Structures are given as structure tokens and as C-alpha cells.
Image (cartoon, rainbow, N blue to C red; front, top):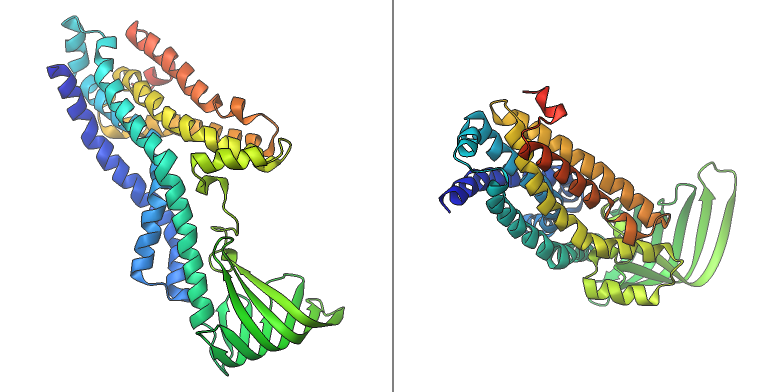
Length: 375
């Protein structure tokens, strides 16, 4: 138990530090889009903090395998560099006897990743979209002003003679819609009403008694359309591009909802393959944490270089191969080319084979070729 505690104490500080760094990097990568909302949409600090909170489960799901591998590699690299592993082996302690604390640590992280994948990640993705919809709803209420040209949403210019915020009713409306890359639509109507549809996350402005002037961008053709009623739809993509969609995506659904949706979706439908892939990944990605943790033992034990840089580099290389494999499999499974029940497990199979190969060579005191050159 003394040895086990000693190994655990080597692992967890690096694990926590690496996890914080990964979270910071991933949040920073999203900050460009979030900053755009702050500058152009007037989003408050509390809403920004809410976005970051809702993004954390997805970030943790991605980060846990890499961080676990990195922490174990760096810990055993330090033990190897200070010849402590040689001393332990001289005392009759094999590499296999050093595995239990690592396996226990990796299993706890696996359980944490599984809980995040099953419960926290769908909640976070769903809450993130709901928050964006509230921002869109507030822009529709606050961005439209009476007798003033305003642009509450990108490429949508409004002018209304009167606007009742309580009833969300508009009178004498002029709208220029440039969202279509091919056609500019100019809408003139006597009245309108804003209808909010939270379930589909869209806002629809229904116009009554008006005319649409449609002009192609190249000015070659134009047409005029008279209408009694016309609906202009504003989706989340008009609030934050490339981050949102109208309907709930598979990664927003809980396990129960995914199973229910799959029962009502035809087997030949591509969406069913995406839902099946998402369902199986809720187990396969956390399982990678367990394999990554154990892989770190032979990797760190076989490296002779001092310092953490070499360990971090090797860890990132192994994780990058796994991640590329995961992305390729995701794409193939989502298209329906390969059944998700088979393809989803390919990255884990790669990790399992790597684990067995590295562990056997390290336990038999045989050098790992790509590490021996770095020693």
C-alpha cells in the first residue's frame, strides 16, 4: 500500500494541472465566437459564464483520455529517470505489480468520464443551445425599434412604424433580408407578429397583407410576390454561426431519448446511424481513459530522458493518433458506410492492442523501438 500511495501521489498533481491547461486551451478556442456575441449582440458577463459552464462537459469528455495518459507517463518517466523503477525491480517488484494503483486511478477517471458522457454532456449541449435561443429572443424584443432602421440579426434590416413589445405585434413593416447569397428579399407589410417556438428553437415573424420584392444579387432578374400571410424564420444560426442548429442534435439527447428516437427512425435513415454512433460513444470514449492510463505505464517506464517535455510529447503523439482514428471512424459511421456497432470500437481496439504490445515488451525488459531512439 505504501508503494501504491507513492505512485498515486506522483500521478494526481500532473493530472489536475494538465486538466486545467486543457480546459483553458479549449475554452480559449471557443472565445472568438463568444467574444463576437459580446461585441455585436451585447451579451452580458453572466451569460458568457453560463456558456463556459455548459461547454465544460464536452471539453472534459475530450480532455480526460489525453490528461490521464499524460499524467501516468510523466509520473513513470520521473520514476524511470531517477532509477526508482530499477530499484523497485531489484527488490522483486515487477512492472505488473505497479499496475494496480494506475488501473484504480484510471478506473475512477473512467467512471467520472462515463457520468459526464451519460448525463452532463447532453445537459450542457442542450442548455448551451437554450441559452443561445434566449439571446435570440431578447434580440428580437430589444433589437427592433420604432421608426429606426436597425439590424438585430446579421443581414436582416428592420424598420417598423410601431412595435408593441408586450404583444410582440408590429405595424407598417419594412424588412430587407440579405441572408440568401443569391437573392435579396425586401418585405413590405401592413402588420406582423413575432412568434417564439422554444421546442424547435426558432423565432418566426408572421407578416400580413404585404409584398415581397425578390432581386438576384447579379441584378439579372427580379420578381414581385403579393401575400396575405408570410413567415420569416430566424434560427440560432443567425445568432452564432457554425455553433448551432434548429433541431436538437444527437449529442444533446440523453440515453433514453436517443433510444426512443432510434425506435421511430427508419434503419436506412442516416440520422439513425448518427444516433447509434452517439449512443455507443457514450461508453467507448470513457473506456479510452482506462486504456490510456495503463498505456502510460510502459511508455513512461521505458523512457530514459529527464524532464517532462519528452513525456508530454509522446503522450500527445499517442493521443493524436487515437483522436484522428476517432474522427475518421465518426465520419464513416455517421455516413452509414460502416455500422456504428462495429466502427465505434475501432479506436478502443487500437488502444487495447497498443496496451498489450507495450506492456509485454516493457515487462520482458525489451526496449520499445520508437522510444529507444529517444533515450
